[in-house]
Image 1: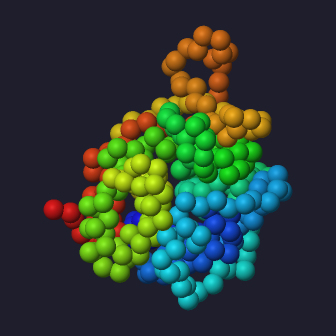
Image 2: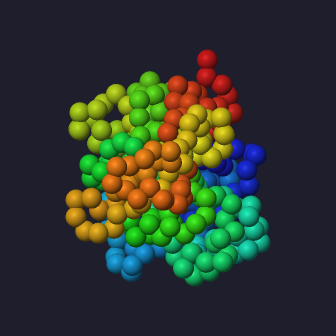
Length: 300
């Protein structure tokens, strides 16, 4: 919705895959959100399995429908018949070195596209990834973030591929870059779109409350989208080598960042710096930026 309400960008398409919910539900969720936002961007179905071919069991703290179990999802339209991977490749062939991909879920679709036509994918302008724990703790495990954990080999393929990647991790979604109870009240009072957004968070708000944090809720996808939309929203970045761990064990799906300019005692320190890691955003104005874009009005 944030992208759909941003007239300066052209959404070529929205690709979905299994993540918090199964593929069919994810498709319906995307269609419903876009329709409510008044956006006719086409939706394409992507991966229903992990990069290695294993079945994915969706896990959601957002409810069984991934949108708060609030009976919000009633799309009129349908997904395109073209496969998401084919669409990604076609869009890049038609717009070489111009397409920016905003990856708000697991990297499976991207890894499959990189395998299918690597030379085409070399012409992606940039991938913006909401993924990893950044320089902080994880949520899927103490060290791993959900989008990476859902398909760590795919994330590793993306990092190692060689196109520019900017990562917004969980650590950019804390403190003032969260939604408070007061802000949810503001959303609900702003009209049908605001109520849709607020209601879609009802299950995760309960999840947070049951885990002892009732005051605010992370909305990391919108933080990553704002980073892509508004260059001045990003205050600091670090050039890093991002290494995704894929071996089974407690550190599975952890992404380790070796920062350029720091000499590590026992590492070889001859890394290729394949990632731009966002290390500071304008968190104090995060919600006001979000609100003004989605509702075309200023707060206060």
